[in-house]
Image 1: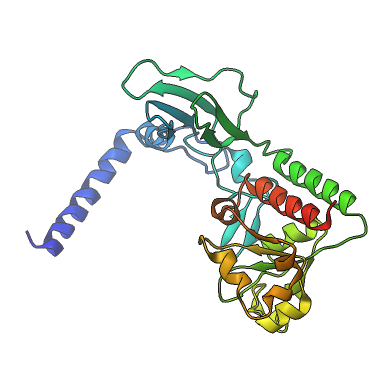
Image 2 (image 1 turned 90 degrees about the horizontal axis):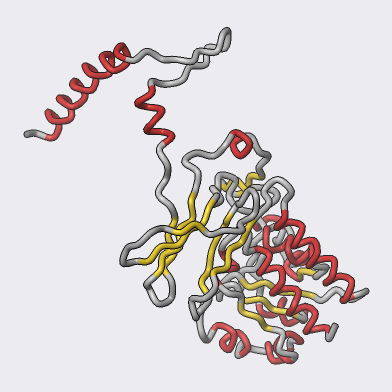
Length: 294
């Protein structure tokens, strides 16, 4: 059948069946004076159907860990405050997507069948962001986030406070390299705010055109060498990324290169905004303290 004709027939059939479905089961639970109506039970069942769990396969590939997730976010999630940045909507406490659905339960089951076993001893209201197996498969780690109190934010604040205390009056300078083109990130960006929270001075803030760059100016090698950063963080993958950076003209005079202060971020941690931002903050803190011998 001609595609256009087939589409027209399907539209006509849907138009004919829809009034019958609506008349067969009228809307219920109308709140007086509000005009709010619930859909027919059949449609409610479709919307409220449980979502399939997220699965994680064990290292020996014989066990599955399942994270249960709610079918729909609650009104507390939908109505929460959110930050908006470059088309993204971010939860202000957890630094994850505001619509991110945290897991509400955890269970295990053998791949070849058997009964699913729920994990006992979880927090009273679990909000599981991610899970990870130990290499020997004896342990299963997961991150739990208190979305109301902002537990992740609290952990970052603790790392920042300890870092600043140990650094004292020192404020190591930092250069964040986004890619091989020497694009960087100022303190107006997300990663730049992490550096600021930890008491570091970002050399990109002083770069020419930084204000007009949207937070990501392209630096010249001469500017980087002149600013002489104490730390360089490489945010892109590549086994030879650090060694190639060190080979650039005059970079052997930069303190970060001379004092082994060039750090390549774990790509997974650096590129995913969420509860693992704590790991990113800890990585920056460790490098800053090591550079200053604190």
